Length: 323
Image (cartoon, rainbow, N blue to C red; front, top):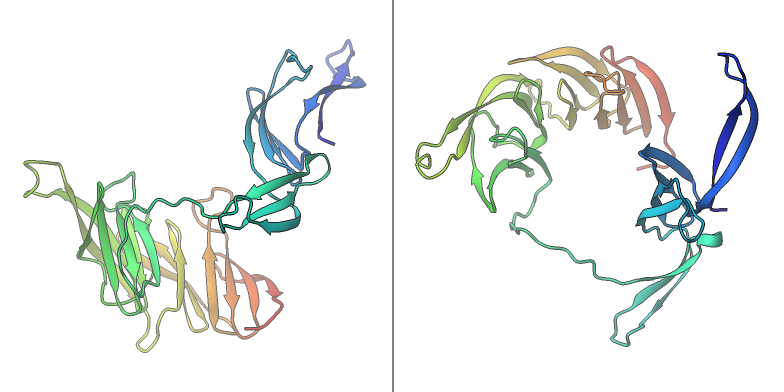
């Protein structure tokens, strides 16, 4: 195991039709025990291993001093599978370290795992009660420069410029309710889904006149273009969206909305058997719009696949366990 071979098909036919007359194998060298291999380009191959470290290798036309046609470019550490482990204080400083029996077969090894991964803290904001957050592009078309923070009963917007940040407010956003989902979407717009509505916000920009003399600070202008509201007394519990579509649910009702330039269209509504617990919406195979959506339900603890845009059920799976 771990031997890499090149299979050569011999074609000795003298006609235009290919005809394999022989198969020959040539050993190129040794790699980690491969679980999968992916050829990238220019003789570079990724070796994925479950029993050792994965490798990025280069296939050579000439053998090296060891007779191998393989040059290892990168090695990616893999601790699994861990068959046994022991906590010891190697340096006698009261700090326990793990010694693991990792890998398998020819790739088996002993690994020492030290505690205390280094983390560099860039900023620290004391904001108790944050339930969710989303990055947004408001002043830049390339980088995320704002952060939406959702609390239990309100929303905040933070603006980032260089290494500084500040709490800001923009027209168009509903900051008096909890935000369920927020994202940049098509037509240079933003969708903000709160507990009571889906808001479509158009992004415009202008030069901040006060700082124009010293810098080219861009201050975004956000205008509310359309708002779709749930019936009185109802509250959105879960929601998701991509660049062109939204899924919004309250109780056991799911609503499929399409995003246009300046408006939101409610395309289809469906009542399910139980209250909706979670949603997922993502285009498949590079399509502009999604073909299916996944819905998780309380009550019967099931996951269902619905076709879009009809919301017709095409698959259902009962999940084991309870609440």
